[in-house]
Length: 68
Image (tube, rainbow, N blue to C red; front, side, top):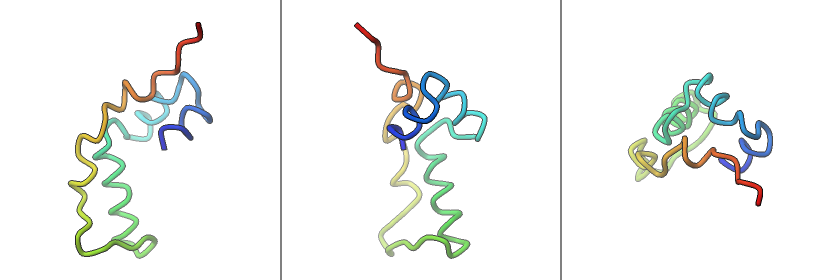
């Protein structure tokens, strides 16, 4: 998701995700589990929304690479 966001939105990636309500990796977990609840994705019994907690700092991860 990070690579796609940076490719599609460049330096505005964090702003776009924030506008969508995505500020943490847990937010992506909520999206995924909403899709599961509506039958659009499947999960194993072991899968939990908590698996998405604090995977990385979204703001840091969406900083564009600095050009040297």
